[in-house]
Length: 264
Image (cartoon, rainbow, N blue to C red):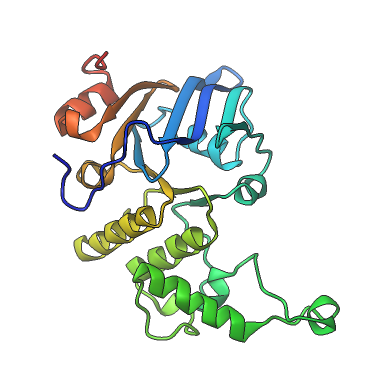
């Protein structure tokens, strides 16, 4: 039975992003030790693991922020080589880190197009680099409306928003430009119950648009509320990859901490 708010992903759905045997070592410290990963089309995969399990290194490798020493990454079945986050973004992978990477003094519309500003047509845009602000405002309003993100004024500074609204802006920006995968790093950290609920619903709407979502979280109730499958990371590698409906929360935590064996 599929829990409320979750869609059932077909077992034979195409794998969008996959990693095999990723390794990364810093001197004597092994961050990734033959780590595997996969997310299917229209699926939410949660990545959980204790501190030092290699979650951050795995996600950085998938988002281009880290170049692994070994292993392979494929996107839509084709080899992918991400040397920078810009490489991953150009390939259609967007990442929202905990710091959100928002410019507080800038408007909501400007933040949605941060680094992707739209220039005016003709010489004014090419030579004078004038921005097409009316178009940016229209498109920003449409992006937020599509995801159900409500704000008072699209031109208001981000610093005037609540924590949940800021998270919503960061997620909406990622969803607006992602073509394949949105990676979310602790999206409900430091949020209250009401704002966390709003962000969880926003993540579901992102998934409903056909995007795959990778969720890194320590909040187990949120993991079980959202994820179709759970990737459990320990000691630099994936030790279990389970359907959320087939495992209990205590069992998942026990596997994560080494207190129980992973299911075969």
